[in-house]
Image (cartoon, rainbow, N blue to C red; front, side, top):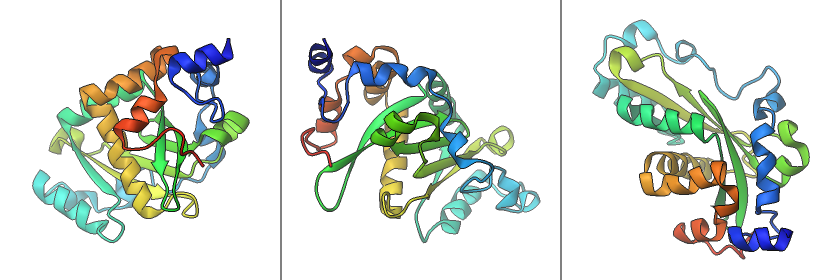
Length: 218
């Protein structure tokens, strides 16, 4: 039965990417429990920028300033209100997803992401299966919605918590992929299946669309 489920999902048993491995995700506790009281970035925008001065800027100026502030690591993003509305609604409806991260040494690492907006947390599939809510997050994306009502913008930044596992450049890639999967209607079909019809989710097909062979896991 397990083999049939894996074949139906287009998954690899060696990776555990099959229906039986996914179905308990919906009852898993939040990954943030592994952080304790320490977050990788402030959760309030006022802890990063001067809000009084920021509110005097135009949306275009705010976007440019935010990107310039994070120019070194290029780990920032700016979402418009329409994009944020679609993204956040889908994130709440489909909080989990798996993503293959191509590694420079060859192969890829399978990551699980969990939305706990304003946070998005990433850990490895192996750690998530073994440790569940105690799995250590290796990447966090923090969203700041304080400017949404007045400036129609949401600011975001990605923090590579474990640089030995996820580099700064890879953090940028994962942030870009996250928004692509959750905002592009076609790509979101993979996310929806993963959350609501896991037996139909095809990891190999999704990996191929990213130019990754599903037999290259590390």
